[in-house]
Image (cartoon, rainbow, N blue to C red; front, side, top):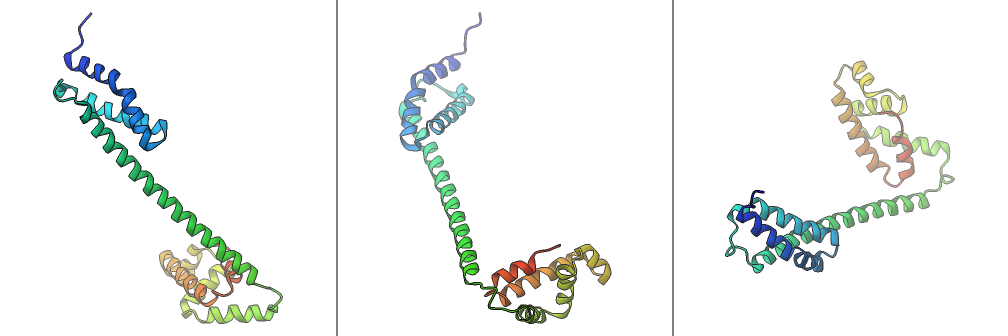
Length: 190
């Protein structure tokens, strides 16, 4: 049976002697046992890859703790960024829900007659530049696809898409106090 190289034996000794201690140390800071174990495994994987350079003098417990400390710091920084991002997304979602709720609560369809709604939409549509209005009407009110509009008007599909985007922005601004109408108006084929 061949003998194990000296570096492999040294690595095995270090692994068996310190794995549990390092894991406990890491877990004190990262809390999750699985995360702590992953951090320690990463450290030992890196040591294994550099095992040819290992000597009794290069491996000190302070060196191992420093590596674990730095890996824990990186892990915690990453977790904090992820948590902050999640919280920001939840705040934005909550704000969007609040705006929608407030808008629907304030919107009373009985205030408007059908003619009032038509007038409101006509005024908003008339605020659009002529070509933009034509493209928007063809798409949203006539139900034509962007490719069909592009072919009929002899323009690119990209131009149609841009004009519809411009119309959305302008109509959102014009109808900002009538969010349910905007939603109704903007639903339909694209």
